[in-house]
Amino acid sequence: MGVFGNLMLLLIFSMDSHYRTTPCTFYFLIGSVHDMLLILIILGSRLVSVGFNIDLTQISVTWCKTRYFLFCAWAGILLTCQCLATLDQYLVTSKNARLRRLSTIKGAYRAVVVTLIIWWIHGIPWLIYQDISQISGECKYINMIFHRYVIFFAYRNISQTTTLSQQHTHHQMTIMVCCQIFPVILSGIFNGGWNIYTLATYEMVKSPDRLHKERLFQSAIALLAYLGSSARFYLFLVASSRFRQVTKQWICGSRSNHQVPSNVNVGVMAHD
Image 1 (cartoon, rainbow, N blue to C red):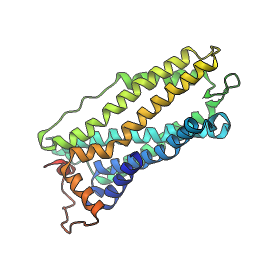
Image 2 (cartoon, rainbow, N blue to C red; image 1 turned 45 degrees about the horizontal axis):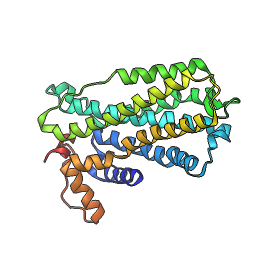
Image 3 (cartoon, rainbow, N blue to C red; image 1 turned 45 degrees about the vertical axis):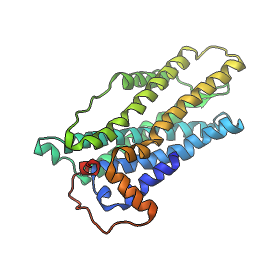
Image 4 (spheres, rainbow, N blue to C red; image 1 turned 90 degrees about the horizontal axis):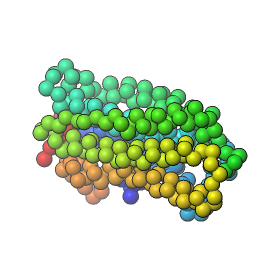
């Protein structure tokens, strides 16, 4: 469902002329690309690990480092694109004309380029400090300072939550943007708790039964995170009548000849 949903988002946002030229949906497009990569590669490798009991992160040092590097970069880009879409929705619904003019497609391009650079650089420490433990044989942080750094920012992400303002004329689009925040917060709480637990039990000698239970719990937390991002397409279907119409046209292969003016505000996509 997640692969199909993100594939539909990619097709609609990249090929529909109206969606392609609006900043908010451009952020959705970039986020969907990285969401697809997360599902196919990162989640795919975890499913192989759980289903066939073949954990490549415990076999290959290269994959142990690369997997977490890619996950950090792609997940960070996805989350940032969701934040940028939220910020853009605030700008286009502002009563201040100066703020509304800040929402431009060129500005969105620049913001995405900066986002890509920052998150790829931010992922480099995982290539350095992620390795296979000689004690447990698991792929984990080998540097306690870096481990505490990860936990600190996980806690900061949990404790700092932004409340969004809504305006009636863009009510549905605002709901679409806001609903993406709930899975992120929920996932952040569970991941933060898991990181705190792993730090507290880092030097403990654990029985095989306890290790199996921990892997099961860790897999459940990871699936919860993927479930939230995979549901975005279906959330958009529920919240936006225009998105449902465009999706129906793409599925049925009968796109309308009616062209939506390119200067129409993105909030119109959510207006019934």
